[in-house]
Image 1: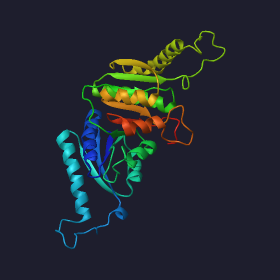
Image 2: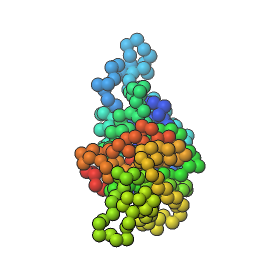
Image 3: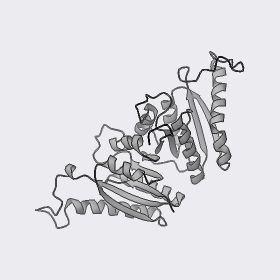
Image 4: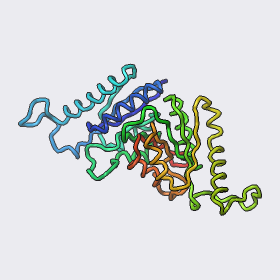
Length: 295
């Protein structure tokens, strides 16, 4: 049975941009595209039917049907061969899309919806869905670089491992290269075991960098074997993870990160690195929850 890619729409420009990206993802996967609008009556002040002083087709329900129809048309124009379905679901957007994610391969949303405040760089639905979605969530921020690589942040965490798996699959689907980036500082780099006589770089940056290169190669080894068609470039950066990934996103087709890395508090579902990328990355960002999270 074919899979499903879900895209959340709300009539915003950001949502329509997400539709085109989602249609492409559905085509590459041979999946159905489902266009979903969450219809929350308490937030809508006009009555459900035609407005008393407006045209017969001026009610909120008709407005919703028009914006969904526009999104469906945008999807079919972008990818004519993709099967497109749609649904208007009563409920709060986060709750609706989280439920939709249970039966999806991927959920795609725009970074900012209609209800966002001008000062916010990413909308609350995008951020919260990245934390709670039951499948990878792709947040469309800026236009992807068509000839850029997929970039994945590698930190050795459970969520990071799932992110690496997803990034290799994305690179294979798009027929592009993969940049695996690992950033380290003396604070976040793992210390060698005291009994490991082969590791003698505890306080030397050059030795630490070599150790980080080795850890990155080990994290990628199994995935390289499963995807020999993907060309991989390893990058080890001495510096902050957030800054390094945001800079790498400038020329990326897609950024992929785990929902929560090694340094996060146990109660947080979305780590600071993932949140920073959702707010500041220069390309679409895929957030992948790992096996260690509560599904």
